[in-house]
Length: 157
Figure 1 (cartoon, rainbow, N blue to C red):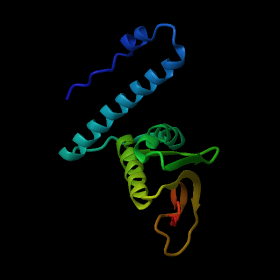
Figure 2 (tube, rainbow, N blue to C red):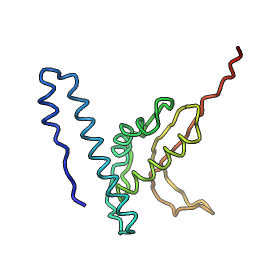
Figure 3 (cartoon, rainbow, N blue to C red):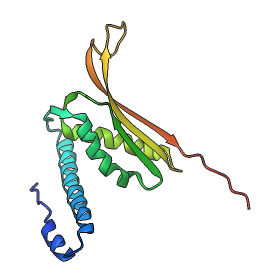
Figure 4 (cartoon, rainbow, N blue to C red):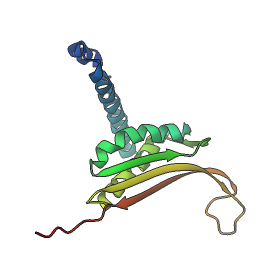
């Protein structure tokens, strides 16, 4: 699959002296690039190719996803993203991380048909030598996702 880069120059030329719209062109370009990356990830997943884990700054990845998810969630769901200061890095394939975040967001959206709030955050976590722990002792980064549905109000005529 060849990847074609969007060409915002033509759109910018059409805008002329309307700089207030330039940021919209930049957002469109970023969304197109993200969509192309996501399509590549889907193809990778469908072919069962091996992932390419590498160090990722989770705070940066969540900030970027926080820009794209509102379009996916719709106008009735408010997205709040927060990461702890000094958040550690993780080693993971970036495409897999995006898939996890998108899947969690879509599941939350589907659980809130009347709208609500989706809270996504990340924090550092230290696992002690607790008996029965699911992970060995050490330092970790945890992804936190919570949703709060808006209550449906019954209107009487």
